[in-house]
Image (tube, rainbow over all chains, first blue to last red):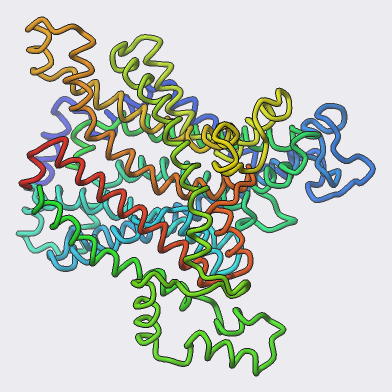
Length: 297
Length: 314
């Protein structure tokens, strides 16, 4: 009975916008971030619908029409094997986006769990986890990635796994910080004092509050992962032929810089715009978080 | 200051230990039998056994680590599996190129970022500020190899002002050496410039809103003196931090930039080592890179003590 009475009183009270509603309202005012979101949705759609949008088979070679300029039968020209650059860019977009998603996924999984443990467990466990992240962060990211790929063998999966491992410390720190600030909050203390088991406290109270800063970090990490994938593929350590990502398209086109600049300009533009969109979206999301969410309470 | 320095240096020891463990573990991560990988797939049984013996792979892991770390402490990082060249020697030979490249990149970054950051902070909200902010967002989003290729197209092919590829040692003339570093320096420095601009704009804006700045202005100091003398020194701490962070990025980026411009530096050595699976060489480069990052962070931390005496007591 008490519960229904409370429900009714809540229903009668003037609606106070939830933190999420305030967030959505603030985000809608960020015109640039909205544009970035729209662009990213379009890129993802284009990649997903690549078989429908492609004008040619991305792998079909036509040695009779190599290094054709953009225009005519090929919107973005052809490469050194006569393959259609536009169709290749669509399929390469799939590879680049999926690779970035893989790296971010690895970083989230490897970052969130130790972060929760570091924030929640005692000082010793916390100290060990934080020293390990410090050690991981004292390697220059790209050098570490190159070394790992060198040892494991060049492949996109290896490259993206390593990139994920390298970005994981950012998530460890973020989640640990949020947990440390939230675990002292009254509502968490209340929940604990009525005997809620720790895993449940984490799932019900800690994780939801860490979600918003996590999403911001995911967007910014996606930008970095994309650049990392492009760099590794440019060095020949990522995606292996005949598959292509935007980075490996540039690597191939680099040999024809003087005669066929479009081979490097277009894929580079796609990488730059997509990375910029992830960065702008991340910044916009962060600016939309009120101070109350940014602190994580 | 001395006590602070000693304590800070001692803090590096456990970190160095963890880093060495990580680098050593690279060998353990080789899928399958490292001896087969290293000896080559067509090696005979005897060759594989010899490789195993030579690399000490028959010893217990702890013994292997102790031997490797002990040698590393004396500056002996082993020798290349392919050329038998000493790893330390190869790294030392390539180091000047990478050092020149990273210094050029940092110089160019500061030449762009300091004016851009200061102007953005002083003209907050106006077009100069929006321009600098836009530059900062775009600068960190551009793949640096792509920037390098565009620069080659523009300033080496269309307008041949700078060489497209290659490195001229400083011994063959300072002018030619510097000219060869302009395009690689801009390529590597763009993202760093963007990051420093962003940080400087933020921290200088915060500093200029502090009470002591108003007091200085009220005492009749000119706007320029306030910004340069009081604003910059106090805004410097976060900026120095970012510069420290960028060193790791610069070392990683130099791998790519050296590839694009055909510079014979550490990055070029790293790529060759990786493509040949030259494990001792890879390990050596990773250790040296991590050591450089740690030393730079040490200098950055010590500079806090100089910029802000309060840190020393912390």
